[in-house]
Length: 359
Image (cartoon, rainbow, N blue to C red; front, top):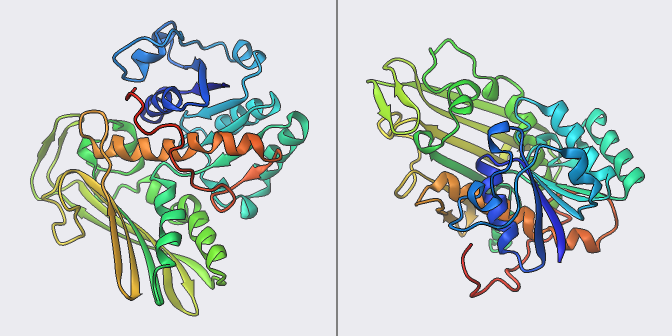
């Protein structure tokens, strides 16, 4: 069994605990937390399971890494603390661990990552012999391996479009929803997540990955942005009220331009209430979906709806993203130490999981 730790127990960390517990080749040996109120709580409780796992959460990073875990699922946020996240990740790699994480956007396309991110990781790999694989939580597979797989079914491919369509009122992350994305803020507020160049920083790597896999050269990467205000005040179960006239919906695209035309597009359509921007794309039902559209001949459209934690689509998206990462651990352990991306790491079938009891 592969000794595996989960570092962080937020929306992604909860799913990671369940994924590690369910994996037949992995053994959850530690859970690292930052919140003093979580220290000592059982991993099963923190992961939303109905039973204890016999692993008490701790904030003692040195002690956990000193045990020599073979794998680390780094589930702590990198959105507003990228330097700290990088330091944590390289620390685990130096301890000899394989690390999988969604936290470092710029490493989705590790070949073109900024030197100030790539070089510390490569130095840690050389020192400790660990590895790193970064894949998105939006989820990454929806912006790389899935569209690439589907593109191979077409005779002619004109445009590959990847969509995330979500009602953020069900997403229990008030700081991210209100401040990073700007829901409920005045329309003259500039949300950090959609400020100029930021979407390209976050999702441009996945556009470049697809271009590399398809064998095409990008002229450039462009961004588009549209925002809509709420027509009336709405109340949400998780985050309270959002006032009329404040931002209620955001739609942006990160476009990979080939020979002057946007050919590889990652699009996000997010609302705080279904009544806002009803003319924009909507999920078939429920609070969200991920969709891949291949414009060409034939036209192909695939919509993925995943649910978890009582039917939440946001939780389902997190769970599938984490599943991609956790399923990569044994492949990474068999590979040479290194820095890997989604084109390197195959999407694994559910070997040994079929018919197992749900965690």
